Image (cartoon, rainbow, N blue to C red; front, side, top):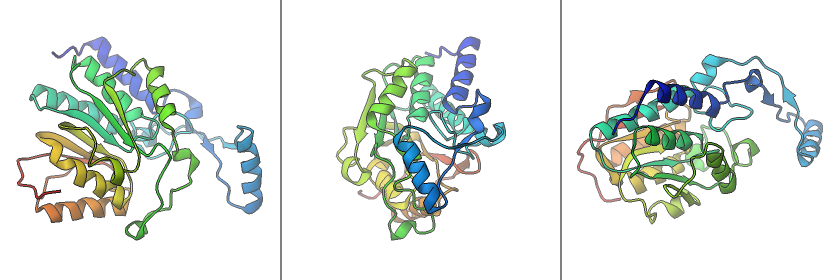
Length: 276
């Protein structure tokens, strides 16, 4: 049943701003990364005391809406447009009776899945789960397929533990037994995961192997009429390469729809897929 009202629409709009850290001027500030050996020693010393050097910058609402900057704090870096896309996809699969859960692979602090959980509540969809798959240890090391993109392993900003993500759900009073977690590298966890049917599959793994592993393990579980969202399609060459190669291997050619400068999505058709 659609429970969307004027008040719930306002709630979701405010939630998008809260999750993307768009409510305060300080949202534009950046934690300074070391660019010299001496600065590295200073930063490391400060980090050990839970202190940081911060660069004060003016908040850019356009960049934040499009997910083009990394908020110093907040729960997601995908921007408001990509959160709106999640809401649109959820509304469509519910209206069309498309079976399956919401699955996100690569969750950072959990903001996108927190938003999906809230949207399901607003739409009265109490029979669908939210699955969050992640290493919960940060990014893996690049492989030879990822050399066109930056090395992100060891970037502490990108690290969020399972406990941290659960606490973030609790902050918004959205953690319950419908929120499920799969901890580990995609290559080791997704194929054997208990996920059965997927209505929305959202991939935010950045690299070739992360994207390919998730598509190979989970695409066949996406319902016909369900959605696949690729967060980094135009941001990481290795991510785009994985999607292109997966299409080639499966002999499919979905129509990609642009969300913003970085992300795309498509709706799954009744393709004849090859065994994973």
